[in-house]
Length: 618
Image 1 (cartoon, rainbow, N blue to C red):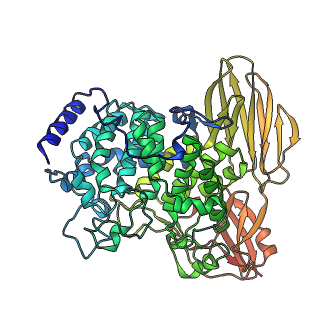
Image 2 (image 1 turned 120 degrees about the horizontal axis):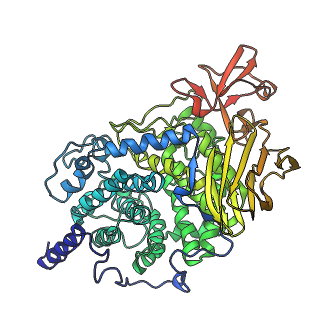
Image 3 (image 1 turned 180 degrees about the vertical axis):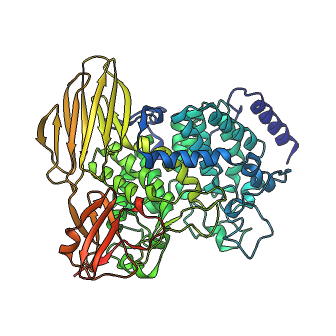
């Protein structure tokens, strides 16, 4: 380290320790050598494009669902229990600092001498730290716990002492880790109010940028001459624009918008924008995640090309998805019309990278829904939620992580072989984000996207309003809403009517009207305290084939939920028998087959049973 940088570094650390102003002179406003047509007519930080739905805050929604709240509480408590020395250990080790505390182990641990067990120890040291800070920050926005806030502030200050280029030189994933650190810092600024978060992020950028490629580099391409190992080509610089755009929107400075544009992967987006799929063979999670960067290019700098890329990319992924909404068997996207999805039912148990894939899916569908107001994105979000991540095995304190949903004919829920894998970072974020996926708003009122027992509070026309949702959905078709308001006020409640929900109806104070499927039905009136809305979403059974070439391989759905056959062998079953499935418990169905009764369960009710997502039907 040069003496001049040592002085600068010392001043930075002094500013952090004193909790001084969150700006490093000369860095925040430094210009990067970049010119792009995307940068004309920029939006102001935090602005909302005309016609776009807004998110509610994390604290505006209270969930009353034991499944959703249990996942949030469990992941939050686990992160709060982790030793801060253990969390910081790989950062300290990789820059040559004393590193007290126990190793967390698994992917998170740093082991410079490990050559033979790469995927077990030290694969991605410290990679989930930023996501954990992000999740804790979002949790604080929900629970307002001073203990949570203090942990975030301590972690940021401890991390600030470790910032150095050696970390990025030593890791296989410099861009991936930088992206997660940025996410944690912008969330700690936004939700915790850390006054030093942007200064820490600026110093992180100064240290990391020389070790990133000059522009987005695709998965599997060599760009680090000092690291010939193939594993050093798996970094994900093509995903980082989303959080850089968000950093700019939240006031971190112009350089983050410029960096975001620099790292947009237009070799990937251009064909998608033209309606041509180029997904075949690409790493599934990261390339769906990258579509959120395209959405942020639209939301931040108004690029219509990137909006088209994201919309078309979603459609191409949806066309190759399983009935659960999951995608990417063996973490790989496929060509349009590929038969590989069907082959995976016997050839793989790695069907969908669940917490990471769900996190990417929820972000993308949330952006698309906000921009287009198209209810099908909410349908897709709902399907993925109930059939994948909400049924994940819990993250364990020893780093055991639920990674893959298994759609094999002989499927089981199991933990990933390696501890502290990437999904240990996204599951806590997913658990916090159920709230911001459930409701949206515009100037006229609210959009109800997900049917989860919950209470939304907001101000409309000067009135304090509460909308409380109660139901046993998706196990029951009936959903109720009660309005509480400090005074009579006019607004609109928009209710998502899923595309599968033929025969739906909505009633207000007992007056019932039919509702068109595949849309948001609008209920506009001057509301008073005690008004009630009742929604009926008929939970009809239907079959979905794995693809057009294999109509005999089908999954059974009831409403948004896939029912999984609990069976040790493929039964002889007909379409009529499956469609006649009858409920015999809160979360249990029974199908009568020639071989006897077959039990079927939703993913959230499966524990250690062997199951089959798809059945061969006669």
